[in-house]
Amino acid sequence: MPRAPSPRFNGLSLTQLIAAYAQKSEGFVSYQPSAGAIDIDPEKSINLYRIIQEWTGNLRHHSTATCATVSLAESEGEITLDITDNGAPFDPSAVTSGGLGLENLNRRVKALQGTLNFFEKNGTNHISVKFFK
Image (cartoon, helix red, strand yellow):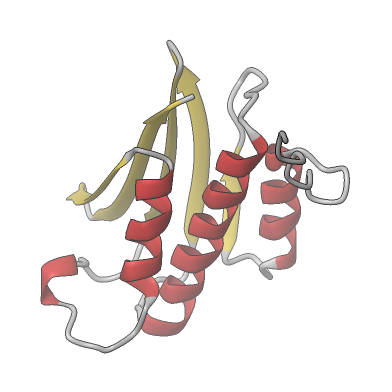
């Protein structure tokens, strides 16, 4: 028996949902939508949205960041989610807390069969998630 499709966020697309999330963030999160429409499987959309929530929530509560920017792009079937922030540099190998934030991120990226990278460039922290549709 085929599985029922995942919910579509109460009728909103992923990009609409991210924009609404940014609008509710009281200026902490900004969203830079891609130039074209991005059609992503609903299961993958849920994981992407949860990654955004998890990471920006962690930034807000556990870092010195005062803002974060979310961007989503597609190129030749590869989806890239980038989240940048202006906080102190982040080294995931230095995390000693017993929290589940990084574990949750890694689990969701694995479900996407993607990659997760953290890096700093020109004084800005980046988290990048990439996967194929």
